Amino acid sequence: MSHIVRRLCLKRSFQCSSHFQMTAVIKPTPQITRKQTFLTSTPRLDRVSDAEEQIRIGTDYLNKGSLDMAMHSYHKSVQLAPSGAGYFNIGVCYFQMGKHKDAIKSFERSIEYTPNSADAHTNIANSYLMLKDTTNAIKHLEKASNFNPLDGEVQYNLACVYEAVGRLKEAETRFERAELLGIDKAASALEKLKKKL
Image 1 (spheres, rainbow, N blue to C red):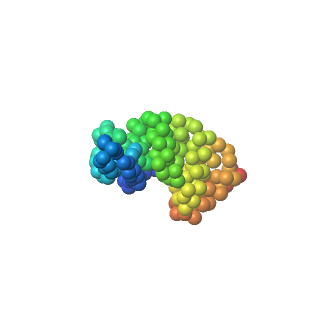
Image 2 (cartoon, rainbow, N blue to C red; image 1 turned 90 degrees about the vertical axis):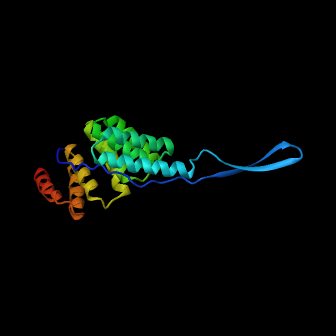
Image 3 (cartoon, helix red, strand yellow; image 1 turned 30 degrees about the vertical axis):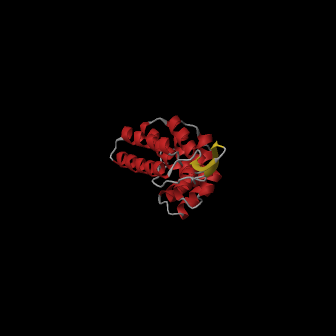
């Protein structure tokens, strides 16, 4: 499995949740009726824009190699307004720190906000591979493949793991797909695999 393509994607986009407003009638005295509007359990726009700014700052720190400062900014972001992008980037930091169990938890939190994220499932799979848990790695690579079947790197990684666990026919199919999707090293991996079949 040493030839698996490792890909950690930084999520820079931010999805904000819609804001719900409730209107209540407050009657301080029987003669006066006032109408008051308030937000319930959703961040205000300024908190969302502040959270987006923290993601941008964190990404700048991460690109400069300052994992601790990046992590701090991403945590500030999810405290202001929880998001898939915020938790995803926290997972990237944990992965780069070698804290793979924490990375998995963060990527799973990300999926709570963006359930069809092929990148989050790919990174969960990579974390499981670092923990030598091929069963869960396969499960998440298959989900990533289902969400984005035209991603050659996912097909290639899935083929490598299938090959490592002895599922050679499935590995062959995935190497073929990866080659069709432009992954150059898939052709040589496929040739080596065919010698085993």
